Image (cartoon, rainbow, N blue to C red):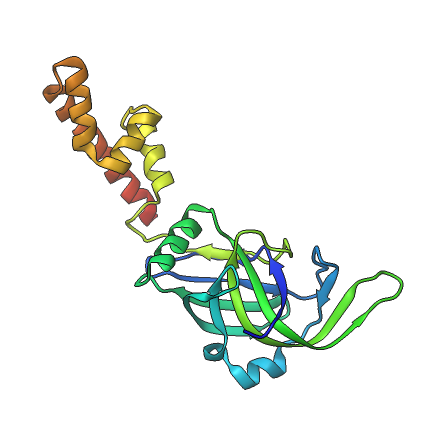
Length: 226
């Protein structure tokens, strides 16, 4: 792959829904990044007109061997480079990336481009990019531009995140954090077997606990629909 310039943006990531669709800003106009570069408004106009969203790749950590989805729309507005994309859950890496985005472990966007026209300010040392040929946009761990983050990763209406479920298991079902994690990773049956082995009387407690967990799950489902 031809060497590209990169600008990392702590992207204003929006909601990521159950299909893997999300929104965000891959670049913010007028913001100086950690590499002392700033993109001018309209820098991507020509490139977008020539390539369109379909011609821009979605990668993981700028690795050309790891395409993880596709861009539904890439457009400039007054704020920056606004994107809407969809993670491909049909591939393993896509499922991993989506899970991390929904858990808050990944929220950075970074652009890979070829500089067409730029000028460095002699007084400040800041490089102003006036025109760029955009090739790819990656989901990354550490973006260089703090302002550019995934705006939102929409949670499925009736499907809470692991973190939400764990919180409800502790608060509403009365489980310890360790027990909650056991339920999440191995299921209720594993927890019940462990309790029975430890106390010799797990059946009755298990029924009560199962009822409480179901009640907590129902409450959480109602909350996500609000």
